[in-house]
Amino acid sequence: MASSVSDIFSTAPALQSNIGILSPDQIELAKILLENGQSHLFLHWSEPGVCDKEKLAFFDQIARLNSSYPGGLAAYIKTAKELLADSKLGKNPYDGFSPSVPSGENLTFGDDSFIEMEKRGVVEARKATFVLVAGGLGERLGYNGIKVALPRETTTGTCFLQHYIESILALQEASHKVASDGSQTDIPFIIMTSDDTHSRTQDLLELNSYFGMKPTQVHLLKQEKVACLDDNDARLALDSNNKYKIQTKPHGHGDVHSLLYTSGLLDKWLDAGLKWVLFFQDTNGLLFNAIPASLGVSATKQYHVNSLAVPRKAKEAIGGITKLTHADGRSMVINVEYNQLDPLLRASGFPDGDVNSETGYSPFPGNINQLILELGPYKEELQKTGGAIKEFVNPKYKDSTKTSFKSSTRLECMMQDYPKTLPPTARVGFTVMDIWLAYAPVKNNPEDAAKVPKGNPYHSATSGEMAIYRANSRILQKAGVKVEEPVKQVLNGQEVEVWSRITWKPKWGMIFSDIKTKVSGNCEISQRSTMAIKGRNVLVENLSLDGALIVDSIDDAEVKLGGSIKNNGWTMETVDYKDTSVPEEIRIRGFRFNKVEQLEKKFTQPGKFSLED
Image 1 (cartoon, rainbow, N blue to C red):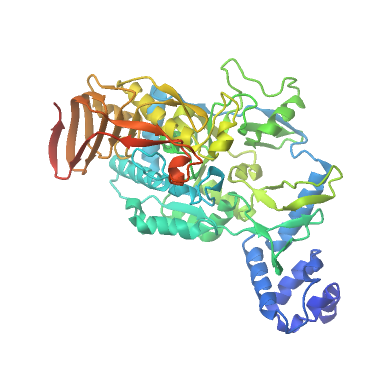
Image 2 (spheres, one colour; image 1 turned 90 degrees about the vertical axis):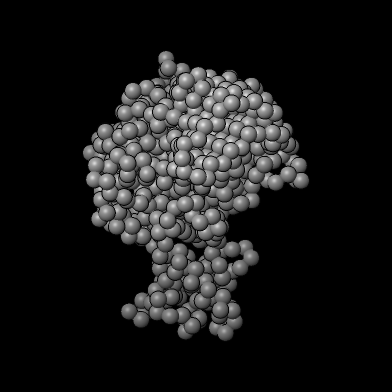
């Protein structure tokens, strides 16, 4: 044994001379590195007694990288070598697969089927757990904080995290009401963080008393980074400023599966009788409009995997949900990136590639990275894979020889690639909903958004906020309110529809059938109006609003809003995104509200109240 150890260590003489300062565990880690072609890491090591602290810190980092990856560093390097070889050869990961349109459910907001699915979803919600992947900062948006701290809209200033928590609590309560056994269960809420976001997420929760959730309901799971790769031989990259440190980068939100697997939470949830795990990303302000009905679809269709989707224009820059069938009989339903879908179709007997059908949309719906998984089959699958997700590598080569990289690369994985390892017997489907209802991510800064070709979505803070007002206005229109049509305006170089600024707390209206019971008579709201409903039992009856109305009430106060309310309201003032005198979270929108005049009412006592002329 001793000779084989010295044989291995002979490839790294500088390390061999330092072996006396290493613990047995560190020697084992060193062996893993040397057996996997990583002797270059030790070329610059000093003699014993020099930089010993840094050498031990190096092995602390190696231990973390080894323990946080399924199968350890040996598995990471082996996979990296395979994927880098495939990438150099230009190998298509979909070779041998032919695409077809998978089966799924198309829902239309407000019709009988949608309403039924929403009601079923509310029943199921008490058996659900929610997982938010929130490892990213808002730098790409022109915002330096964590993305979940950004205001979802600026009428009330409610941040994304508060809205998500209040939505889960509203679903929890609605589900308790319809529970046959009257039991009260708390819905668990998991947030995957990163080094960049962990402490700031924790602070945001603690400073705001967890936005009304019990602290015991919330679990933060922090993802670690992975080692960077310097070349096609998967040699780990050293930090350019510190030869005793490996360069690392994020591995992607696919890590959420291995973190859940190792956390022990899955067993706990199964023991508690939970059945569904819902995964979602950090800045889609409309997503909870889609969740009750999608959960209803999962339960009705008994889907093991349900991908939430929206209608997608052919060649639009959003992945398409596709069924892939291999010549050897394997099949899977997964997200195929838009730049891969068109060539894949052309190579498979569809000469025109990805084209719109008679509906005006591609038959391959757009993936919006929200997944509903059935907990039992999910846990079984993770036991097989250890939570590992099929990875990819995306090196930026210096030239067409593909022999060297412009900068180091790393393996990445995506949450939505989970179905790639599932057996053909798995029930994998999708639920399509209208874009206006379900999808308005905030991911582009004003400069990039302004360059988006006309007719394509901006996906900016401006369009994200305007989409919330549009969705709320259209929901109320469907409930019988005459909401005036929008006007077009250019904000931060983006032409958007400006609807009435209507917002409500999730507890006021979580599903459409609830909203319909709270709106009656002849109601109308002008385009220049602002309405924020912050109470639960607020009934809108024969209301004519032309101005700004803010209503807040405790749960035991029933408030009727009616009559004619007219005031100077809130005006929208344009703001230039380069104007540093304005806070970042406002200037990235291109507008701010000037609160000229409003009717603001707060009801803090139980009882019945009326707000009428």
